[in-house]
Length: 160
Image 1 (tube, rainbow, N blue to C red):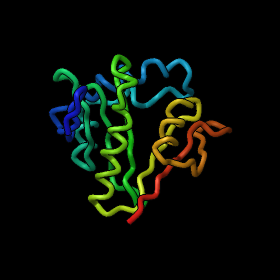
Image 2: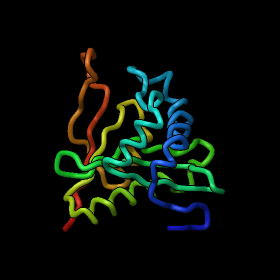
Image 3: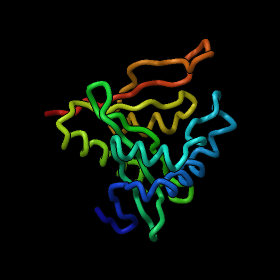
Image 4: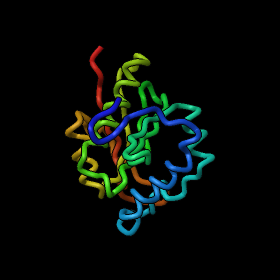
């Protein structure tokens, strides 16, 4: 899908290095305030290519460069959406919402009843974005070794 600002397309294994660079750029600002540090910063092109082969994903291109991306995989009776990232220079243009909509369309195409994700508790802007897209918080969890919750699961039920 193409809009005036960006082109939305499926990600392929060839996009893995660009997705790694995008994740590092997008998550860099969060590194200092997230404990434990974001695992997205440790992704490799091989791991991203494997994730795309297992499940898939979508990307938004602007001027031939990957400006946003998301990965997904069937898990726990739905489509799990992970590693959603938009480069800081391209935020505020609707790319994150377009990527969420792409994941929702994929879930519907696979006839899955829901999409779900996990997000760190301190990332309140991200949680608000997902809530605005129809997600509800379902359960809080703590990373191993942490006594209090560090992230929350969110889901959106899809109508048949």
